[in-house]
Image 1 (spheres, rainbow, N blue to C red):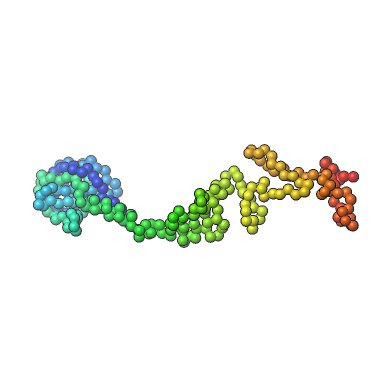
Image 2 (tube, rainbow, N blue to C red; image 1 turned 30 degrees about the horizontal axis):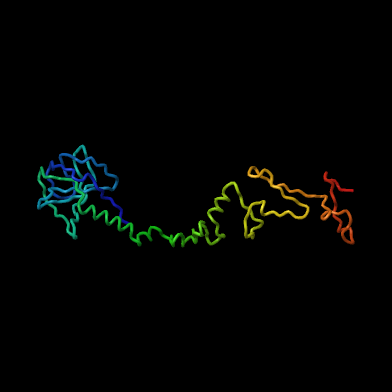
Length: 247
């Protein structure tokens, strides 16, 4: 993937050569340097003797303001249609300007095109596949899919769960299941059913809630003093409200 390392600088900034330059990589001595801060690995272009038959473009990757030098990293610069600028010897006093020339626009175009190239995107994404609103990791066997207005997570090992359910289970409201094989989770209040003679009461609604389990020991449909069958084993004890055995 191509990154843009050459940057637009102070287009049109002009100086002159303080010493002759042989057109090769190395240092160019100038009478004034542009006020440019180059990041690591960054560079810009200058043009020497603009409009002259021996015009030359060079890539600069460092500036020394004290010594008034420009470090030339490359002199093989494309000027279009696959043709490079020539290299020449330039005399003291020759003009040198910062120039956003053909090469920098070519660099920008190549950087943009490489980012937009599908092969490069595939390499960047690795094992991720995008289909509509869905994302799948083919190596990890997990998916994020859209179902209506819900975001659903699945990994091939557990049942799919919506983002809403994950957020709820991670907050104050906790879901429970009756057993490992329970197919539907729910709140404790919804997962309990009161049988005959039993009442479930939710205390302190919307606060620090608790469930109160009450048993009606006077319910004669459940608790009887006499045998309901032919043997004593069918007798069910009846308790008074204080918990003692009823007479």
